[in-house]
Length: 454
Image 1: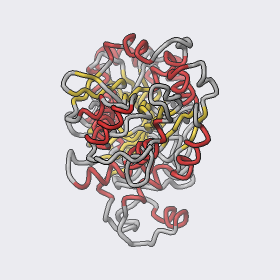
Image 2: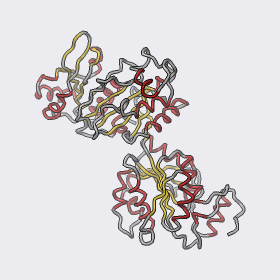
Image 3: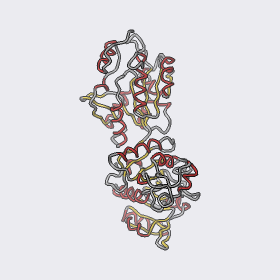
Image 4: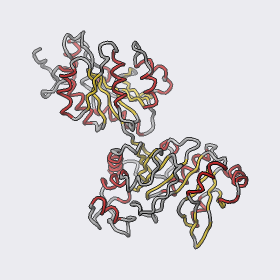
């Protein structure tokens, strides 16, 4: 995945890079990606670069050369770096006060800013005067390098380690641990310090290998960092690679539709016994918890009190659909979507009567989503599509607009060109429990041969 896709850069963005472990490389890499796509890219720094780093840009010039000269340079080079002066081997950038004038007078498509320094170290905590982020920044990328893991927490290896020991009580000189990176990235006075309130935040964990143990470590760091609602995503990758982002971790929720009357079943099917003294709804919720989904909403309708008494102790949120008697399934889905936190990027739609739901299928969907496969993912078994379905936030508005007699299929068909099918090797995605015979067959398929007395 390219940086442009992972950061979701749009024309008009002001992108600021902060933190440590590859800011300059990330800025340059993104700049070349955008310029090769035909964008006019302006770049600068609010701190300093080494004079040698100017050679990494297609063209560099003084910021006060005039709007016409800068525009002409963009016409010829597409990607231009602006600076104030060069002294003692250091390139001094433009002050933040100049940002509005650059935006108002220069006809560039995007402005990229290195807004922090780290002296080449892989991890940093800012001093009082850092970072220097323009108020106009619309996207901020806090960075850390996975190479910090295991390094001593001292001034030789980590930038301003004293701030970390003061905030968290980390032991000086002890090896840096995975959770520490997440804590620093998500802390309002460390990784998130000085970020304008309106800016989106997408963190980047650099020097993440394509596979192996360390990629798993990076994924754990990302999940911990996403506990901050300010962070909308965490990219994992290596900025100098041809495809610099291996995956983009974003908050994903799950909506379990458990509000039906079970009229064909003759009894509440979500409350039927499944295994280990658990009901069907408990088992499904447990499978979602095992899949490490943070925001699990079980939507109730009929039998709300019974379902709530089982689910609430498990830590999942119970959302009651007040329109369950007249609104059909889509009204439960709407209730679940409205209850989702603002930072959740996508949600799985899970049937409350699909007891053989498997974490491996959920993992496939989440992994495909993280790798940029799409925002409307449907599992498929032998060319037949099933559930759960992953639906990105951009489609929620269309679901919420559905009329009372509408169905989710209407929205899916409306965006059929956006669907990505994820092939799975289990028919569990196709099976739900509508009748006593379905229940018996599903138990047999799950290896639960004895049907409990009804």
